[in-house]
Length: 309
Image 1 (spheres, rainbow, N blue to C red):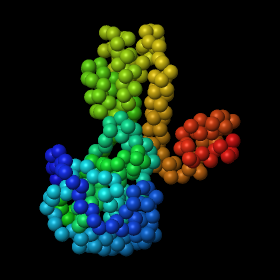
Image 2 (image 1 turned 90 degrees about the vertical axis):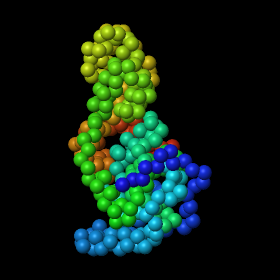
Image 3 (image 1 turned 90 degrees about the horizontal axis):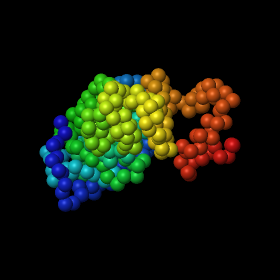
Image 4 (image 1 turned 45 degrees about the vertical axis):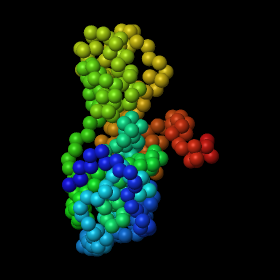
C-alpha cells in the first residue's frame, strides 16, 4: 500500500545518481519504443510472462531496502521518474488520446491530478501507476508531479498496478457533471468547491452562477443545467457574452466527444485514416468547412492542412 507521506516536503531532492536506462525518457513515443523492443506482441502468452518475470527479477535485484527513506518526497521532478511500461503499464503500450485530453483539462482547472504511484528501485524512482498522468504533466510542460510511494517488492507493485487498473469505475458523462455542478451552485457551494469536485471549468461554473442570480427563486425548480439555461434564455432575463457562448459551445463539443467515446471506445483515435474517411462520408459537401475549423486545433508547428487548402 502507498506510504502516507504527510506534507512530504524536505530540504533536498531525492538521490538519483544512476543514469536512466534506454527507454526511460518521458513522452508517448519513448514509451511505445520501449514496449516494442522488450515485448513482441506476436509472442505467445508464455513468452510474455517469461519476459515480465525476468524484468521483475532484474528490478528486484536492484531493490535493496523496502523501508521508507528520507528520499520519499510528496513531489518529484519529471526528469527524476523512470518509466518501465514493459513491467507496469498493464493497460498496454498505447496511451489514450481521449483520456489525455480529459487529464489536460483537469490539470488546467485543478492545478494537479491524483498522485502518481511510484516505487523506489535502488537509486531510481519507477512509475507503477499513472502513465497517462505523467504524459499529461509532460505535455503541459510541468516541472514536477505529485507522487505517493508504494512500499513493497517490485512483484507486489506489479500486482498493485494490475489491481488499480482492474477496478470497475463508472465515469460520469459531461452532461452528468454539468448537472451536478448546477445543483451544487444552487446549494451555494463556492466556485472553487464546484470546479474542484466536478471538473467543470471555472468559466462554465461562472455562467451557472450568473444564471442562478438571473432566475432568482425559479432557479431551484430546475434540476438540470440544460433546463436552467433554456429557462433563462426563454425568459430573456440573461444575455450571454461572446466568451460565455464559446464556453457553452465547448461544453457541447465535449458532450459529443463523450458520446463518441462510449460508442467507439478508443478505436477511432488509433485509426485516423478510417476516422477521416468516415467523417468525409458523413459531412459530404460540408467537409471543407470541417477542414477549416480543424486548422484552429492544430499546434502552430504542425499545420499540414495549410499545404492542402
